[in-house]
View 1 (cartoon, rainbow, N blue to C red):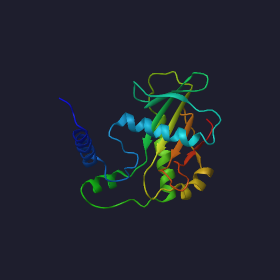
View 2 (tube, rainbow, N blue to C red):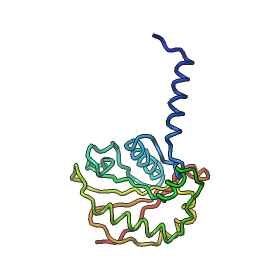
View 3 (tube, rainbow, N blue to C red):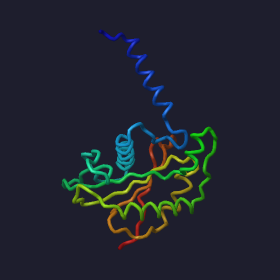
View 4 (cartoon, rainbow, N blue to C red):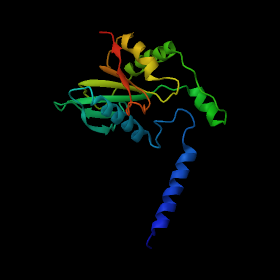
Length: 193
């Protein structure tokens, strides 16, 4: 049976509508319908933003076959980089918005720093599979509307986070900024061991 153009359009619209009804209703900018696609998409957005500033970029990005880490890439020498991806989001606001309430979290900058510190400790304590890794990166992303790079960058540029045992590099990725037409990010300063 041949599909006509209108049949294909109808099928595509049905699929889009199905996914839209399943889409998270709070801080959903980075939400994709598949966890692995979302994590890889977050890493790609960071890489694209980094290309403007970094001299060498990881390549050969792929989803990890063993989680954690979520993704694996290679440095310019062919060494593996494990990349763990996690979100900074207010879980209670997600639940309330799913129930039909229209709420959001007004974050204080110190709360953001405190949650980043908590995430760093948690992710640094994981057992990472599939190595050895020459580097282990942590990407913390957010789509929280009240966490903006204009407000947070001055604080993140000066804050020194606790040392990590495994994580070699940590990044904070903000939502898309139409003014810069990019996803602003910050390489977090982590104290030496």
